[in-house]
Length: 205
Ligand SMILES: [Zn+2]
Ligand SMILES: [Zn+2]
Image (cartoon, rainbow, N blue to C red):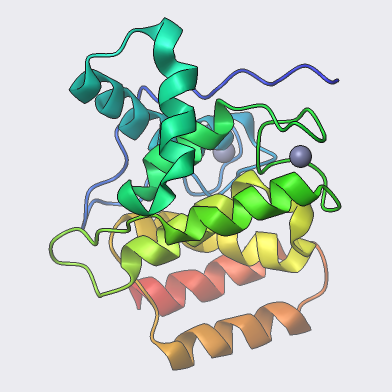
């Protein structure tokens, strides 16, 4: 079994609706958008999930020794909890089949695939002032970035580059999203800056 990577520290609060975009000092892209390859961005993305888990723990007044039990309870009823709590709970459980964090193992691990499917019944609550579905977009992109091995490289690229914009409350229309995905499919591997510019135009106008 390979050692589990340390869970993200999550010391930073996720960006508020309408907040300005900030740059990541480590990768130079927009903060959050360099995950999973940029460690600083990856910590930020993990932090979205971890911060909610910590406040969930506080609300239950549960000590660290009971975290696993609580995580099992959450994963048994994912439809009753916020998506971030469900994702953090999955991180705390070990997959009985592959030994990775539950739901984050290799593409052919049946137990991980099952858990991954169930995560999408969790509660997604849009923040005030965002287009409906913004929180869903965030949750999908966070999920893809945190389990990139099950998705094509181009899709991971699109998801990670869009995440900083979703976090400040933006969401493309269906047509805009289709145009963007066509552009990404046409682009050659490595044309990250081109796609980033297209996203800036789309979201920031
Ligand atoms: Zn970064
Ligand atoms: Zn597994």
